[in-house]
Image 1: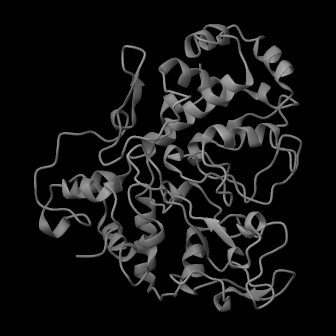
Image 2: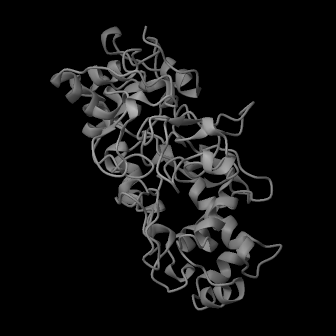
Length: 397
């Protein structure tokens, strides 16, 4: 049996019902439970008494929610409206959705993000798919442990500008122009019904916690639908979960990431890795101003370390890497196959494969043409069409 990371997804896989020759990784031939994946499987709704009931894809644990920001349907709807409201930006041209587009799994399709004032960021917009489970938000800042804390960064960060949100009084005045907001604030925050920055941040965070993606063909296959994956994607899955490629060590479990937290977590899983994109000086250096975890910790060993993003919906979230410097999934396979990127000329020239700081799991591999096609087919199978089109996650009417 091929290795499979220990996670809730192992339990899910063990429930799959399919023929031995078509069984998913870790599955055993027992009847699958009667479940649906897609619209019904990614639902989250009010529990009927003001509480909240998570209705999650099979194998997905309940997200961790801060005690001071409990979930409610009204709060989520308020957060959705705020997420798409351009009045949150100083010049009224950008919203959260400007950098997090639903059809792109809440990324923006750019190599690096663009702010509301035209400023170009050094890093790419990360996907918000399953962000409720991410233990360390942003690419390289373990201090960003909650959505509530992270939401303030695009609103008030100034280097470079993202939204350049006006001060609280001006922001509240702007939102007061929209009649739909008053009853939503009252319903979401009955103790303090007046709009405030705290309420805005909590509502947006609550909405983002509902952005759960677990309805891909791969998920259906794991649940027992042997026809959900093409023969090519099945062969690609075998390669993905093999020691030969080592992909599954970093892109692990139900989240396809090794930085995960949920309501039942006994400890925090948070990992940063150097994938040998750069080696400017032969000692592993990355370009100034975008060097990864070292810019926060000042520890030499943290040079080039960034958080591993999810592979869910990876086919629609390119370009890739923290700085968008790898254009396609095919190029990403080249990079990992070579155990690091070689840049022949220019200011970032260097042989990443020789970096003394690269992650030890980056050992390289060789794929035949058909094998490469199979791995790419498996990546495609991680796309969740229902998530990319679900109206609950899109702009309010």
